[in-house]
Length: 220
Ligand code: DC
Image (cartoon, rainbow, N blue to C red; front, top):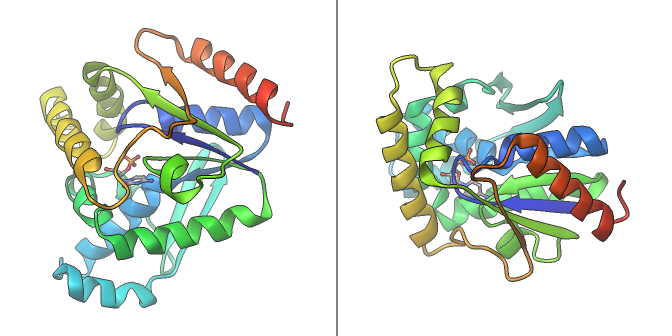
């Protein structure tokens, strides 16, 4: 069984999906972290051109695990959980994620992973392209100011010099790229339930979603 939660950068998808996973005692899958992992791999391979990079994909061994409220990512044996949250990765990830062969690689990893357990996954195109038959689909939104404030907190941990303006600009650029790319753009699935989190407390939004999940799936 799979519940998906799509939405733009900083809309609160990851923290919401994690909290729902904890409360419902199911697995959490962070698809953005997988695109970030491949972006880190591209940077650490010396930023090759995209054609050459795609040829390196068979060398990539990614694994992920949700434990202790953290989504861990390992790339070729290296724990890159923290490294994938840096500004350098954030600045390049939309470009890497726009490549159809990279999307196919990540989608394949995710589809295999969810075969064995009950998952809630967050991303951009999960309800439209990756899991069109998901058991339940949410689409989260929030104002750009609110999203930037949330992201700033997260990014300050790895880069104390980052400002709110930097983060707002990065989010604006990423929204534009994520929504306008040719391959599986960020888009609300027709059958997704929209949750606007602007001005809502975290607890309010979680309660709203738990009620929906309980009413529409076999989980409770
Ligand atoms: O959720 P995030 O900010 O960690 O995602 C990082 C990037 O990955 C984001 O800019 C767009 C891309 N992404 C995507 O294209 N498709 C997904 N399903 C998830 C993320």
